[in-house]
Length: 303
Ligand SMILES: Nc1ncnc2c1ncn2[C@@H]1O[C@H](COP(=O)(O)OP(=O)(O)O)[C@@H](O)[C@H]1O
Ligand SMILES: [Mg+2]
Image (tube, rainbow, N blue to C red; front, side, top):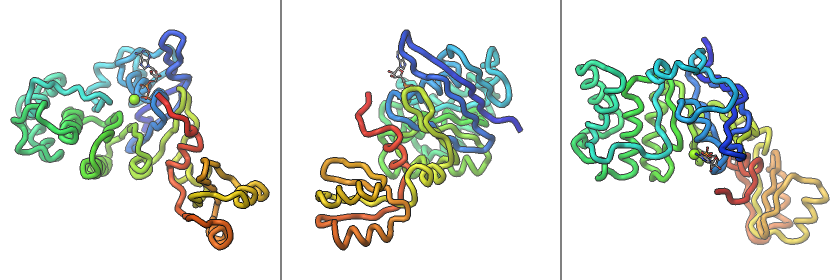
């Protein structure tokens, strides 16, 4: 089976500014693939090129094994997209938003009727179909955007920051919906700023920064390669501890009073530090994707 998405050396500039700087990746059928990166990394621009909203400058793009040039109409029938910006029609009801969107795909009325009912159930929007979009909370709007993206029963679902700003209940609800869709074989491309979300949902992911891909891999492999098994966090490191980490050439980051030590298998080191060097608190925890992300993209604030 061909890869669902094949991106090769994709580039996009706005004037002299390079937003996407030659990225290459492939997403296999049934995978959930993550595009991670700080604000301005080029995630949305990449997605817009994938979907034909933004023309690319160069590079090649294949969806379902088909080169995208000129085949957009055909391809879009197989894709569902939740854009970063909420682009629901504010003048329409929940049901009307779904029906109007379904009209793009020339589906028979009976099919639309059935799909709308089933998607309202799937996204727990039953009983709200007559509500105006303006009256929906952020979480409800996101659910409606997801329902709308599924109206054409896509084989590829693209989600640009689907859970930004949602409360924990809504996030977990969306995750379980995505699990369910994955169980049905849907391929998903996802961007998110929540590393726990990416770690939980993504089979593989890339971390991008400044238009380039820094790393690619399965979350667990990336954590092992770039951080190790565990991390020791020292609340207020004293001078002798700073000396110790230098003398032993430990892998660490000095964050002012706080010291983060990427300790590999940290149990014995942790015990030693706790006994002799940590007067104000010290914690041993499993390494996470967030550690990888911060190590690779730094701690400076972005856009
Ligand atoms: N239409 C545009 N014109 C000029 N610059 C843009 C345009 N769209 C995006 N950019 C810039 O390209 C960079 C990447 O943006 P984007 O792809 O939205 O990043 P991300 O989704 O990773 O936060 C940003 O610096 C953004 O300001
Ligand atoms: Mg974006």
